[in-house]
Amino acid sequence: MQTPEVTEIVDRLRTLVQERYVFPDAAADIAARLAAHRDGYPADPAALAAAVTADLQSVNGDKHLRLLHHTEPQPEQVPGDDAAEYAAMAQWAERTCGGVATARRLPGDVGLLEITPVLFPAVLVGDVYAAAFTLLAPVQALIVDLRGCLGGEPSAVNLFFSYLWDHEPVQITGMYERATDQVRQSWTSAHVPGGRYGRERPLYVLTSGKTFSGGEALAYDVQQTGRGTVVGEQTRGGAHPREGFRLHPHLEATISVARAVNPVSGTNWETVGVTPDVPVAAADALSTAYRAALEQLAAQDGPPAAEARTALDAGAPL
Image 1 (cartoon, rainbow, N blue to C red):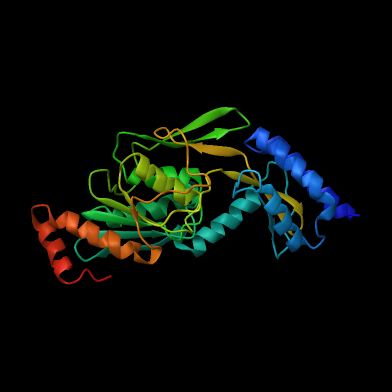
Image 2 (image 1 turned 60 degrees about the vertical axis):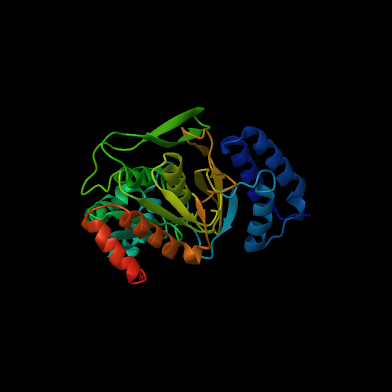
């Protein structure tokens, strides 16, 4: 016989899945599975989260569909009040330099821009991106390291990609939303603050088996627009934006409420991940991309080629 608390948590979760999950047919199957297993779930919150998450993901493998266990109690949610979540995100961004872990120039006039832990909402990191790209805009080739990027917000992907394009907007991955039954398109911005790297010079994007969600979106858009070369490992495969719902002081349900739709492929990277153009171990991705960038520059004419050849002759140290 199940405890009333667990029964209530599972029933509330079933309702959320049926009402909010982006795939209604799968939602019905998932809700039925939760109902069938309800009496056998453990009462311990951490064990309950693990068992329920396994059932949530058993139908179609959606990695954004989870029951998360939090060690610290979570505050009550007030409908329509996102101030607490925004404040927490802002503090996280401030502690991590807006997600820009590295922005530096490598020998041979190659820029390195590392994004971790996530692509924070554009409203929080616009000035950080402007500063980073203003610093790196003059380089002759750019490496964007997403190996430690564990997620991100669509507005940040749009802003970041805008710095990799030019003033003529291009359509990138948008979102189909169950609530509206429509695709919300996404286009790059004609104007960005600070310096723009642009769309003509070489671009390499690094991925790992940890790269997820918003990080995958950026890599996928680079690939689908033909803007650059993805180097590294197959990514995790999460393309469904989610919302969080507090079901218990220590338990949060995350429900996928939309799905990514790329205008070129007509689909996304859900469950399969982003397949790199140059598959190598994540640990070797930076050195591989750096050498490729130098070789690409060395094949050109002018001073940048000479500097790239010098760097190659020196062994392209990192």
